[in-house]
Image (cartoon, rainbow, N blue to C red; front, top):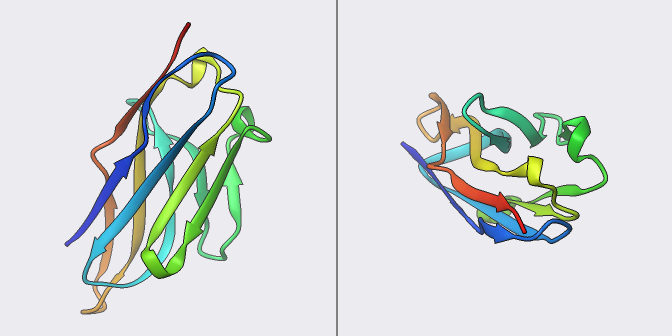
Length: 117
């Protein structure tokens, strides 16, 4: 099994910043994709594709930056110029292969981000 643990959410005023982190642990052989989603409908926020490229939803481009530490199986989401419409539960997602060569895909428990004055 692969466990994803998110942290870094909280309450911030409009225009403020937050940094989310997500660490994957377990019998991981490789991670093909890892990213951030938000809300009940799990809309894509930012993700690394299997080719290693970062992809963002249009509404967060130029405000959010996704980075990763491959050695630690960890990704980060730097969120700047936050807006009230960014308020949501943010979920981390990862997919790849276990050491047994079985595929996996996992979701974190979510971390609440609230943007309000």
